Length: 143
Image (cartoon, rainbow, N blue to C red; front, side):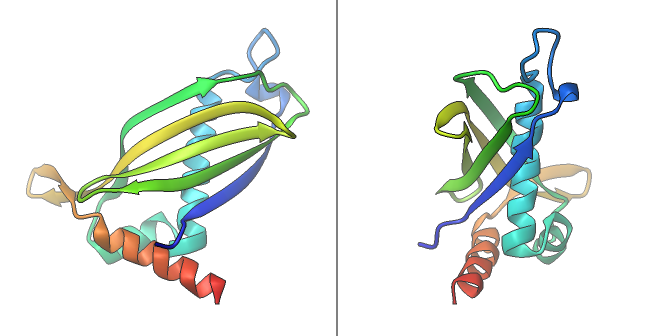
């Protein structure tokens, strides 16, 4: 199995923070999503290209969670790593870990699926073709 991982370095600015001066928690979820999309660009050509290849309307979110271990403040640089840690028939799971230096700031996860439109309905598509696209991109980069 080829590991699908991407690291994003995020400068924390004043506008990311709440009145207490720490990062407002929804921003962590925004950064999870941005890092996921950067992973797709790096290994598969981006969300739109992948969806076109899969005949999908999106790689949608099913479940998400985060644990906030320590605060991030204006001027910090958050190094956020996204890793696909589990592949199932119709879902895949990402794990996120955000660090400032050696200090753990946030851990999180997303459970996502490949969504296909059938008439007026959406259904979960097979994840194996997505896995093949991303692993092929990672294998090309490794060679």
